[in-house]
Length: 289
Image (cartoon, rainbow, N blue to C red):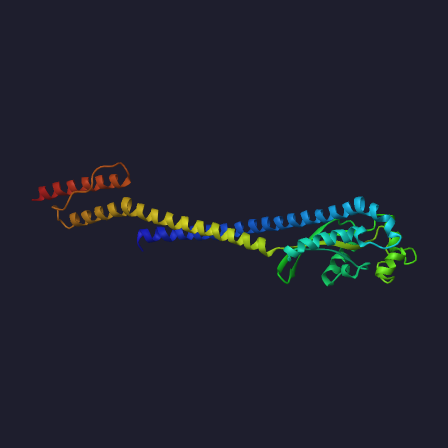
């Protein structure tokens, strides 16, 4: 096997190990960053929903309270306001969703579905949990969801949700008396759940990984060509010339061209040594003659 082939095989082996290791760790880091970006978006949307709830409680409900004696207005309910405001975002971003999933809601649209029931149950089983993040498969692909408990911390909520008898007649007229009752102070009755698509961020991370690894491969290819060119012109070509001259001298063909002169590198030292050996050989042959 020729020297240049051995060098190339060694470089390719080192590059292969580095390429695989770099690709693995780069993908891990970028996917982690993508997940953190998605989680950041989910928290931002969750805070937006919380802001809508707070605004409704502090600004809207006090203005409409007198009308509640005659007609129940869902717009005064914080969860309704948060859900409606997010519905506008959902129209332009259908993969993003927000729901105040409740085990026994007043409004049937807020009732938990299969996987949401598991989320709420987990929050009920671990009342110390303030937030947790999970992943699920949706129709559009994998999604991350951010869940926070809906806990009855305000005794005023029980004026509408303790028993049907205590609830406003206007609310009973709108929603009936079968749902949204029996809540208790301090109880986790549901969960705020924001779902954000993970596929877009992951595809972006994969594209970045592919670009980095392509650049890495092209850089190595350029380096390999450069190393081969340097090895050929500075090492192999002079060595082949020295070997050809030495082979001719060893066969007694002393009229062959002289060994290369000049330089101070290892090849120049080798050429000088061969030149001295050639002169010694010529002197020895002259004495024999």
